[in-house]
Length: 374
Ligand SMILES: Cc1cc2nc3c(=O)[nH]c(=O)nc-3n(C[C@H](O)[C@H](O)[C@H](O)COP(=O)(O)OP(=O)(O)OC[C@H]3O[C@@H](n4cnc5c(N)ncnc54)[C@H](O)[C@@H]3O)c2cc1C
Image (cartoon, rainbow, N blue to C red):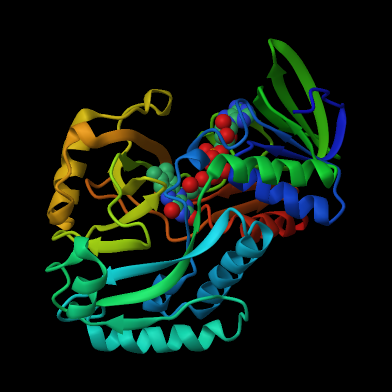
């Protein structure tokens, strides 16, 4: 990445995860002279651990949040158009309950509604309908016998290569004139009468940058800086989020979704000749700097997966890799719930972004840049 750090920018973006890159993209489109300061490699932290599902917002129908459904559809469509070689539509199947909101009748209604909303976003592929238990058993051997009430079939999108996608975005940002600086750790942000001073270190060397605006997208490290003269944003609870990557292919064509007996929703996602399974959330109990994979968490996670997808018959020796990230959540209860959507707070030219979804990074970036003028 470009090694030179200049003294003045219009906008300094702290943190080069997907949220920082989304903000940089919007800023560049609006003509800001922007720099992104990342202490490691771009998208090397939480953003490299996503399950890679690019959600189209079906789940928000449950809360009748139509604007959010449409926004997610738009985000999905934009990414499929941006990088059709990397973000591809994929069929998804979610097994249904016998009663309640996730039973066949309400879900069939939701599928019909979703189809109607999709017509407002021409270009989105795929069908949405309820399929029978027999159809599930015929099409998806892994779910045979596990979907007595049938399943919802819909189409979302999958990012098939995160690293190529991140390189693709960085290339695009550089072409738009954004300065990307990696291996540069920000240590402090101070408000001055007319602008901000951002202190950072690169290769042991200190730098002081002045910027008219600052966007803080440091993810779980959002409060790790010395901040002066800034109203801090919301401090959430934090949870660890795990995915397992296993050596066998559970299904090559579909993303499979099923809730555990405790109501935790899991997805099995094709990843080349392997599969990724997730996501398992546990409260973050250790200091952030020590967040690591715990064997006990994996034992619980594998047990819950085996209960949810019995035909997968997972065992520890099949685990190829464990993805781990830290995300903002509502509480530090044993079964934490992720914040429903991103949280953006603004204080006179200083904006903080807490992201809960990779999928929405473009629209989230748009909101963050709009908030600079609040
Ligand atoms: C297991 C898991 C599965 C997920 N699955 C999905 C999914 O399928 N679909 C979906 O849409 N979303 C998913 N997500 C959510 C999504 O990945 C996150 O919401 C998103 O990546 C967060 O991005 P971010 O830029 O806010 O954070 P990060 O990627 O953590 O970025 C913050 C950056 O700040 C940098 N940084 C920290 N301190 C400093 C400093 N002092 N100076 C400079 N830089 C610093 C870090 O190195 C890091 O690169 C998943 C997340 C996890 C963990």
